[in-house]
Image (cartoon, rainbow, N blue to C red; front, top):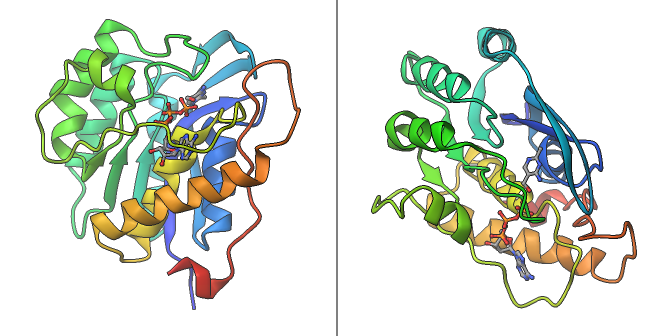
Length: 232
Ligand SMILES: Nc1ncnc2c1ncn2[C@@H]1O[C@H](COP(=O)(O)OP(=O)(O)OP(=O)(O)O)[C@@H](O)[C@H]1O
Ligand SMILES: Cc1ncc(CO)c(N)n1
């Protein structure tokens, strides 16, 4: 039987903790096929973001079209979108999809765990006007919720850390929103998918809590796949 297909539209993290690396490994762990649309390349490690190189919007759309024209996409997750043009054009493309629309999880990556600002005021405005209204679930952390102007929308699920004592939490937001998209692609309803995503992130944080990788906030563990019986 085919696995569900989930696409991440996000940036790379050279340190392998957040962004595309977190998304694809989470998809693999949760039994969905992951496709990826790269929006930006970041030079980043556990201590912070050194440089961001956005991918031109036309190239972002070309990647997305290649995936959507060929694969039966069940869910899409967006992460770092890097430019207001990308947010607007992506929203227009997704709004125009015919047939059964993939479930859409929007993780509005605006502030990294290190505190680095990953989205400008123009990006924030584009999210508010174009992308938030078409999302099934939006997963800002507290800082991003503030940056977005604390929108009073039913699809907004504010994420708030948790009680596992660890400094190895770089990539938790990406892992959480990817797990949510994977569970929605498996057919779970939003509340169940959100609860399973919380449990999955907690499991991964337990696995990495004693790691000493890097000089800053270390990576949350990736992979350690769940068995089919554990997934859904
Ligand atoms: N210390 C923790 N213990 C348990 N669960 C946690 C912890 N930290 C994060 N989580 C889980 O991960 C989810 C996302 O966490 P958080 O809101 O801190 O991400 P974030 O700030 O967007 O992360 P990042 O910017 O590193 O990607 C939370 O909703 C929660 O389920
Ligand atoms: C590429 C990328 N996406 C998302 C985050 C948020 O943690 C990050 N630090 N880097």
